[in-house]
Length: 195
Image 1: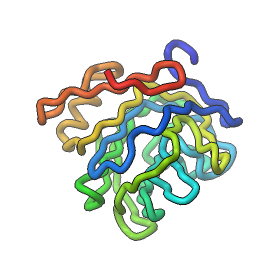
Image 2 (image 1 turned 45 degrees about the vertical axis):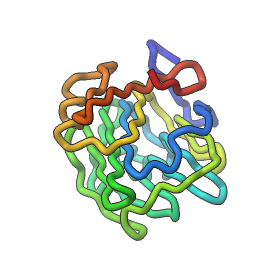
Image 3 (image 1 turned 45 degrees about the horizontal axis):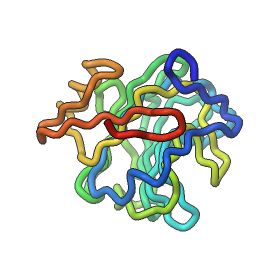
Image 4 (image 1 turned 90 degrees about the horizontal axis):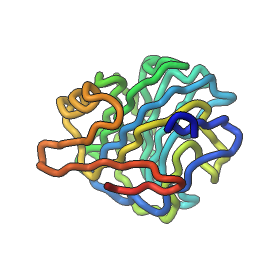
């Protein structure tokens, strides 16, 4: 950890956050990332990767570290069509999985990115006994290179207006969603704690 941010060198380090964030019909995953050039494709950023049930995951599918992808159980997979992430610069990323697999959205710095469904549409997030891993996938040895900060997982799908508002608030701000529920996930050591 450097200046309160997690630094990953792509060589096997990750945060084991326990068996959390499982089988949600709707969810939002948000974090700030400053990716470096990846040593190979498919570098996993955050997710629950099980050996028999994949749960969900967010990954960088290119070595230039400029695209993002989100996958769900059954290996359904959506990827940004264009290069949307700026390497070596802080990017605010928000992934929204809406209403039990009817839609996925990837926002970069508050703006919705065009997506390509590469495997069968949005998919459903199934139960997985795997741990929530931040910074890499230990089962497949696919690890992120760069910095991560301000990681949050919400059990609801944020609207585009809510995503833009949270991006505009900046790092560390509490999330106030229109459903009158306040969520904030804070990384504490090697666990995720809801506060």
